[in-house]
Image 1 (tube, rainbow, N blue to C red):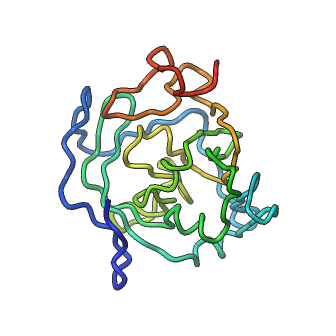
Image 2 (cartoon, rainbow, N blue to C red):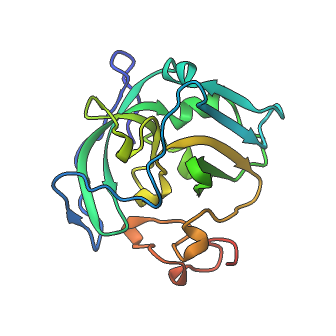
Length: 212
């Protein structure tokens, strides 16, 4: 895994990863999501980190405050469970490690729930969320995300299927025990590793997640 360059804020990827099994290279960027595109209201927008925080408090940022957090870029692929992959995109935004440093989790935290508009959620192991290329993206290839692709913030976790990185993120809940998110409750794999083709819950092995 790359580390941020102190001059450019860029997290590098030494080479383009090979395609995970069952995936195909996609030209362009299809729009895929559940439900309508939310209307962005900057005066009402707030990013929250809550749950089992180290200090027991909820941490909040307005849109202006969130946009002022350290900006870094990550060169990474995007693998959709619908079997398309976008290779070598540059994602710009706030690294998850930055949020973890600003609002540390309590020692007992093992998982997070990432919350988005309309109550959508995705659960991740803390280690996956803390990966040094995971980023709350506001830009792709130097351009602001469009509303259809998750503006103002979407999570990118390059080593997991893209449903684990919700669009229109509004907050993160620290959890001391795992709990399934929106798609995980509806038959998707609790972990979602594209290299192991972990697409559906029937593929889960003991220990992969809580019972449905």
